[in-house]
Length: 170
Image (tube, rainbow, N blue to C red; front, side, top):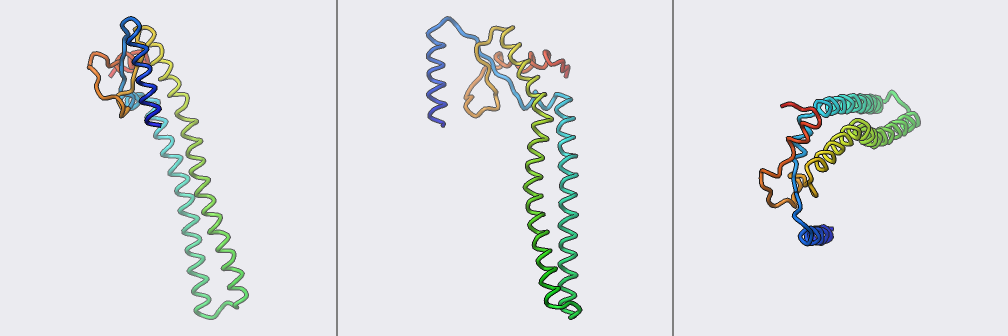
């Protein structure tokens, strides 16, 4: 994959160097996204959603632990028949499996919620980025958070232009 990226970048640079002078820019996407109020709100909503799901899972685990402790106490006191003990232990195993499935479901729900909350915002940022690039004649705009960007002059930073396009004043 790294070799493919390097080859693609080399070909792109070769094509660009054979044509007339090209204009390049870069943008700090982390800084940009951190300053968009809707992103902060979406992040807060996602954390709230995650907290709600986590609480549900913790309540289920606590109930399972309490039931297992009570079942063990009954066994030690001899107040439960071996047959009833096995039946109830089987039910606890089923609940344990159910909790494991719930945990997997939580990850899926979080991914879906993240997509639901952030996709429209990222589409908005991408549209603003495209508009800034076209308006200012940039042929390429790199993300300065990308590890493949080795050097960029400050004059190429288009973050402020994209912020202005998005209506961010700070």
